[in-house]
Amino acid sequence: MRIVDLIAKKQHGKSLTTEEINFMIEGFTTGEIPDYQMSAMAMAIYFQGMNDHERSDLTMSMVNSGETIDLSAIHGVKVDKHSTGGVGDTTTIVLAPLVASLGVPIAKMSGRGLGHTGGTIDKLEAIPGFTVELTQEKFIDLVNKNKVAVVGQSGNLTPADKKLYALRDVTGTVESIPLIASSIMSKKIAAGADAIVLDVKIGAGAFMKTEEDARQLAHAMVKIGNLVGRQTMAVISDMSQPLGNAIGNALEIKEAIDTLEGHGPEDLVDLCLTLGSQMVHLAGIGSNLAEARLLLEENLNNGKALEKFKEFVASQGGDASVIDHPERLPQAAYQTEVLASRDGVLSQINADEIGIAAMMLGAGRANKESVIDLAVGLMLRKKVGDTVKKGESLVTIHSNQLDVTAVENKIQENIMISEKAEPIQLIHEVILD
Picture 1 (tube, one colour):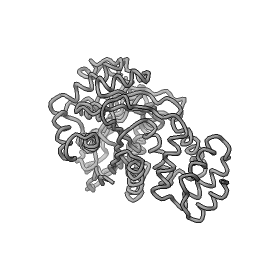
Picture 2 (cartoon, helix red, strand yellow; picture 1 turned 30 degrees about the vertical axis):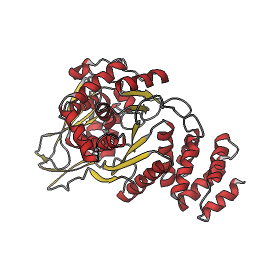
Picture 3 (cartoon, rainbow, N blue to C red; picture 1 turned 120 degrees about the horizontal axis):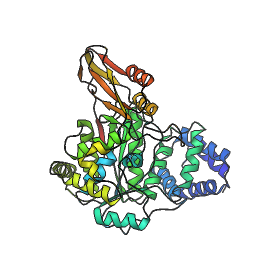
């Protein structure tokens, strides 16, 4: 078998067999297949695509290229959630204790984030003392005991995906549905999930800019999951404006606490209940999605979700008293209001650029060496569709620098006030197969 023959085969639009895909990924991982030949294959896949079986074979070949996490010692159906990313996306911090409060085991592996704000781990580390440095044994024990734990990514998971992603990044083949879907699903499967819920973002602040691309990606990932024996569902959700009101690590923890207390922002609550109902249903609780949602709403209202969050924080070394006293979270030295320049209706918030404004304050990482300031960020005071009066606050800037003129200008340039606004549809589609 020769890789050059497989490249030609894919260039002509033919399907690769399981054996051919395994040969390709194994050879690329070990270095026997050089970058320039794998680049040619990635470009052939970019133009010719892959069918469902090729995608699932590619996914499992990348899973098998390295270590996998064995979560079989955890009782029950382990359900994982993945978001394709966005601005102010606090869903994991709300969902983990909320879903766990119904007895569903949440064994979450998370990373640190590049970009607008930190990853889930960075946000959680805004809680004094909180640690994700857990042994595998401790991680499993906490999930069995409390139904929820979060650990940092470790081990040599999906090395083939890491190599292929780096290659795609410099060869113009990042935006390939089969390669994106296989990359995401290989990491979720290697991390030991029994079932997977996917939140595919669409809009200005998302990787997928059009509804058609988001739909194709969501269907591709759901097909892969189901074909390889992982129950999988997906939601396509809006990211044309930031989710919720908080953008920044400690600010998002405060918003998560508000949400678990039953008075979070409407869009964040709705998305968490939509994703959570899928997670609960896949775990075998609730006869349908509607019943699962009602159970989640009940635990938001009766305090059980909040108590589970306290238990989760305390069990990982965090100061759980900040949940009742969020003023003990890191606080920025200065607050600056960005004011409306006219009357009208807020018609647009460019999520991506607003995220960059938060990063300019130090809320996120521009590169791997960047140090995050956990206290800084933005609080949106208005969302799309809200009526605005001249001089009203649109955004509060939380900063540790006195001069935030550049950040203020960036925000003003990317919030539009008009005579009217088109309503934003948060949930575009729920994909079950």
